[in-house]
Image (cartoon, rainbow, N blue to C red; front, side):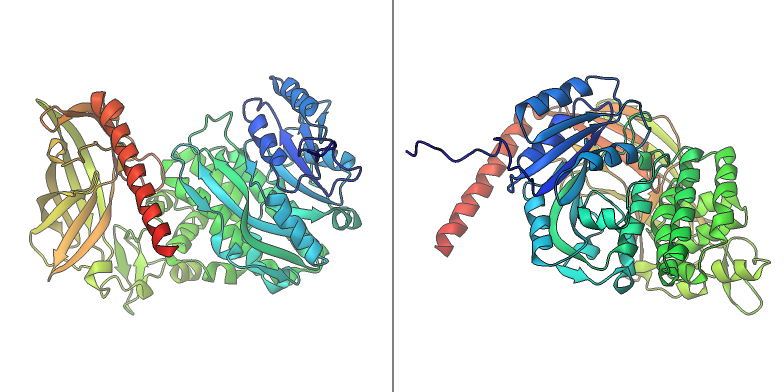
Length: 570
């Protein structure tokens, strides 16, 4: 053994670190160690880590000092007062950062183990202003993983300025990138202080000022999403219920617009406007059904002046259902906007359409009286009356929900109204079916829809949840029943919209003659389209014995299959 062993990754770094990782934190003592650990694990170890604390009032300062004492690569900063945002702690960290390259990490997220190595290699391969990688989104509540803006980072390439790919405005995160410090200093580029959505302004400026930047498709950042976080703990993006949040977002958009003019990048304004409509406004649009009249009025007052300034071409690039919601908001038809926003992106039809003398079809019960209204609310090209039946658009709404406990089981009585604005269903009664699939087997319950008037049908159905055939190891999850219609051997399956609020109803159901008890909850979805939601949770031996054994057996089968494949390939 050598008398001088190689230094470990935790030993003192070289005098000049290759990269600085800035970790910003505020009152997050619990998650800060995880974020810092992800930086300490980097496969490229010659880095410095700057923890920048925005004057936390919990145990964060103590945790930061302890982490710094454990690793000579770590520097701990604490701002003298709380700034209320991400910009000041990042900027203060830049004041002390020593490396020629810098990247940013939030205390509730993580870097992938090779993030620094991947992005630093891109810088060393070419003279670029920044390098960016893929972001992996992880749902805290479910553990599900997805890639943020996957089409933008699908292939490795070097982009010669934002004009070459203006769609990249959609990837506005500052945390997915490693910046050349010389680039930031040359342009005096720092995070704007005193405002929210600072990432969007900073990233827009970086895109416009950069002469070239490289995209690598490998994930470099793990972004943890907690959609059900308490209001005080929720991220700025998850505080859309606050009108101040809307004002902040619009304010940043105006700052970006001003910068595009000042920097001579007006040519990308339509692309930036399209990004705002497709991403920023779209998030608020999905929430509109859950907002009260006072909030809707305040929202329209804030956004409408800005919407009037956007490039017409940005609207033209949107799907028709999003353009309808936008137009209804701009016209002040806020109750209609709330109605149109349900089912966005799911092909849900309006309750009614109206034709003009020329035969053009419009959203709602009247022909719009303005040129812009007629242009934006025109559904003629949607082919409501001519689509193949499988993709025909209907609107299925639950008008009443009643849960009836019957001995060991539970039934859900539903009154359902189906709107058929394209008049695809012949006059007369129709047999529909309610379908839900807990596990692998589908529970299908037929029922009758009777005509109320042309294009509107109603019916009642009793869904016996005790009749569902669950797997032997039970079912732990959520399902949303769908409504099925058939015509000439063609099946149409559509969302089932529930009342936006009704008390969640929970009952015990003893499946398999009592051998597999479950707690079953019927509730409104509470977000998105607002579908009827049914939640199963195993109880007793099913939860604590049968399911763990089933998972262990499944893992064993996977391992055996992997060994078999490996032997076959050897």
